[in-house]
Amino acid sequence: MNIYLHLEISDRELDSKLLLAVLAASKGNEVLVSSIGFIINGLNTKVLAPGIYHTKSLTPSKIKTNRHQKIIEQGSKITSIDEESGIDVDGYTQFAIDRYSDLSIGQASAVFGWGSNDTDTLKKIYSKNSQKIHKSGSPRADLWKSFFIDYWTNPKEMPSKSFLLVSSNILSTNNQLFHETIKSQSNAGYFQRNPKLFKKLFYERAEDFKKVYEFIDAIKYLAKNNNGYDIVLRPHPSENMNTWKIFLQDIPNVHIIREGSITAWVKNAFAIMHNGCTTSIEATISGKPVLTYSPFQMEYDHKLANSLGYNIKSKEELLIKANELFNSEKIREKKKVEVKISEVLSKKLYIDDNELAAEKILKVWESLDNKSLSQSNNWTKFYWLCKIIKFKRVFHNIMSKLFIDKFKLIKKNHKFPPLNEKDIRAKVLRLQHILGIKKKLECKLLTETTILIK
Image (cartoon, rainbow, N blue to C red; front, top):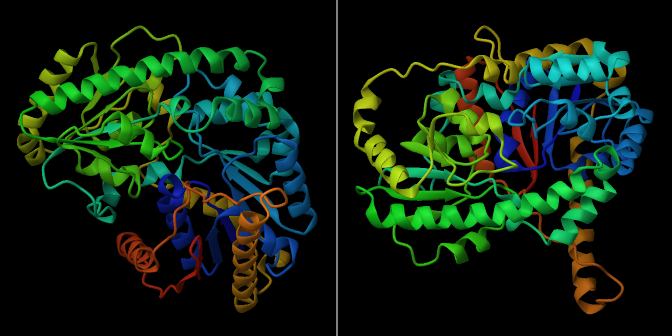
C-alpha cells in the first residue's frame, strides 16, 4: 500500500511521522514523508499512484476541502489526526467546530483522536460520520514514553551545563504581522465558525505582550541569580527566533535554540518553565518537573497546561523553586520517577501501555486498503518530478528579483528546514532497534523535505 504522510512543522511532527513510516514499511508498505507540495504535485500529475494521504488537519477552508476532493477523485483516501491537538484547551467543542466540519470529516476515510475528550466530542457533533472517528492516541505521545528513551540523542547545540528549558508558546507577539494573522484566519473561515474569535485575538495579543515582558524579566533575574545552571529558551516553531534574540541579547548563560524536536530538550532539561504550552503535558508524561509561571491573572490562559506542575506567581519564588530542582537533580536521576496522570489529563490524552497509537493507526489504514491503493510507484520518475518542481521555484525567485511587480517571492519555509539524510537514517535505525524490527528498510532522501521509506 502507498502511504503519503503530510509533514507541516518538522520540529513538531517529524519523529512521530518516522515512527508511523517505520512501522508501516515493516509491514510491506511504501511510505513517503514529505512537505505538502511534493505530495500534491505527485498525485495531481499521476506520477504518484493512489494511496492513503494522511494529513495534519481537516480545517474546513475552501482551499483545503477542494484539494481533498481532488485527491479523493484521483482514487486516494484521506485520513488525519489534528497536530494542533487541542489537548490544552478547556473543553473541546469550539475547537471541534473551528477545525472540522461535516464536509471535511465526510471527505475523510478515518479521523484519529488524541483521547476520549476530542474523540467523543467529534462523534457527538459529527454524528453521521461517527464510525470514521477513532480514539487512537497520538504517535507524538508514543515517543514521550520511557520505552523510547534511547531514541532521543542529545541535541547538538545542548549546553554543557545543566539547563532549565523555557518553552515559549507566545505566538501572537512575534510570529507575523497582526493584520496577516487576521487575514489568514479570515481566509480559512475561522471568524464565520467562531464569531467571538475576532475580538479574542485582539485581547489575547494584548495579554501576550504583557506575558512576554514578564518572561523576559524573569529570565534575566534567573540568569543573574541562579545556582550555576544555564537557561535554554525554545521558541515555538511558528515564532521568530530573531525577535527572542533581540529581547534577550547580551544575557549570559541564556541560549535561544530551536534545533530538533522539543522532546529531546525535555528529556535533557532538569525542569521546564512555561505558561500555556503543551510541552508541560509532555513533560508531565515524561516525569519532568514543570514550573508554570503565572505572574498575573490571565483571561486567556490554557487551563489544563497551566494546572500542571508548580504554580509560580513571582520571579523570586521562581528562583527558589528552580534552584531547589537544580540542586536535587542528581538525587532524582537515581530514583525511578513515578508518573501520575490526572483524570482530566487522561481524558485528553489516551496512552495505552499495551499498544502504540501508531500501531492503532496502522491497523485502520490496513482496513482501508484495496488494490487501487497498492499500485506500484515509479520512484525514479517521482524523484525527477521533484527536481523539476525545485528548479521552477528557484527560477521563479530569480525572476521575482528581476521583475518585482510581476513575480511574488516564494518565501523560505521556516517551519520545515532542510533534512539531513544521515540523521534521518540514524533515527530510522534507532526506531527499528527499539521496536525489534529485523527487516531491512530502505530509507532515501528524495529532496531536502521528502523521505521515502520502504
